[in-house]
Length: 108
Image: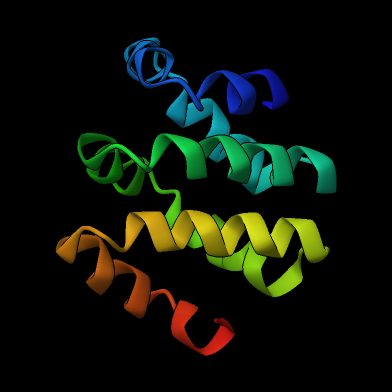
């Protein structure tokens, strides 16, 4: 996840990472990983969510719920990455509704 996070800063890499199907494994790591794994997965998703097309795909892959969970239970860095990721996803109007229903507003 750390490597994907670093690579996803580049727009071309961002597209390649999405095409390679990395979102689902990152979401799974958010759900069941250790604290560092969750933080790195959130960081990678945060970077990927800068792209408008990716925002919808990431939300559809189920990232909102585990990001909200990390926002509630993570360490300081995990919470920061989760908040950034949710912020990037919230640029999309449909995702705003999903995020609000996931009780993220209270934690933010």
